[in-house]
Image 1 (cartoon, rainbow over the protein chains, first blue to last red):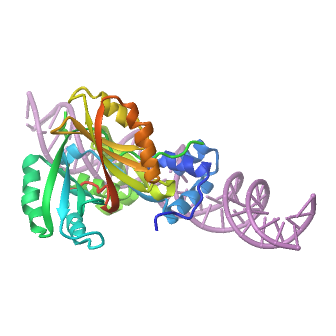
Image 2: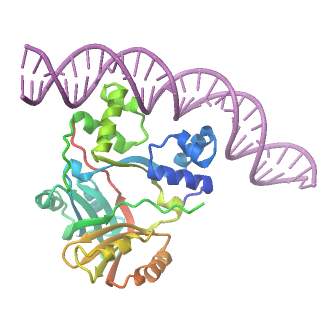
Image 3: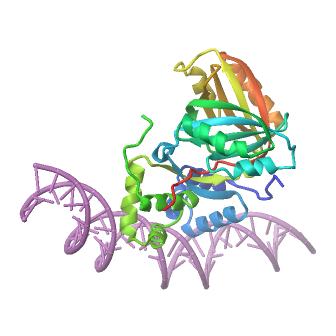
Length: 158
Length: 158
DNA sequence: AACAAAAAAAGAATATCATTCTACATACTG
DNA sequence: CAGTATGTAGAATGATATTCTTTTTTTGTT
């Protein structure tokens, strides 16, 4: 199911806004920001996690620090259609593959890939993509510069 | 500059791996995992932040909880080339726009967008995109299902 | 409107944690 | 070989997370 059966109020929004910006903020600081007791914040966060509103807390690491500076998007045409997700799963299993999206229109996937350089991209396509037999063709788009990246969700204002 | 002048060792990798999975883990827990003192972990994390290896700590929020279930990628052809980033900035300023990438090959941008539904997407293109005069044309790809999403970086094994 | 039931928040108490400081070990440098 | 710099451990303290109890607020029902 896509929808979540849980009503968020203004306090929840405020908490989410703070956590989205800085997941390592203390409950005490959140409590001060929203004007409530730390214990109440803890309860709310627990509930937000349990209800599936908060999925994870993650550190965003600089790709350059791990020598993964080349970003590419690859359209992939595959022989299997929707539901038969063998290609998607095979793509998802590749470490360099950041995202895999099943897209509408032409039995294809859109894949986001990070490699060290163009040689790494070539190697990836030769070594990993070529081993997935259902792939018919690929079209690669190189990212020159990311203007805005992995933006967080827009949370309704108080 | 793209590269980072900082050498990471196995302990740093272990810390990054833990923080990437759960940014709200305590320094004490990290210390237990890697077999070091909490004070040492704190120092290392501070340095990783200061050196720009760790960019941010973020809570990943379920888009469905905020009623943003439709994901789309839009290729945008614009009149300005590389460097003249007016179009990119205008796109980045749109709240629904999650990512903006300047791509090679055809003076264009690849944009990732989240809206509530197809009506929201239509409204976005009518109200926001249409107001950017440098946009020549757009090609939209609807995501049916995300197989793998916003994967974190692959950190070298110990 | 009044009451009961349920949910949420505050407040206090305790265990845990972050942070600072000092001391020590290790590696690098002249 | 001294001297410097870097990094870690360990202890101390101040802050925090977490639990539990009490109080308040909300909700639903008559």
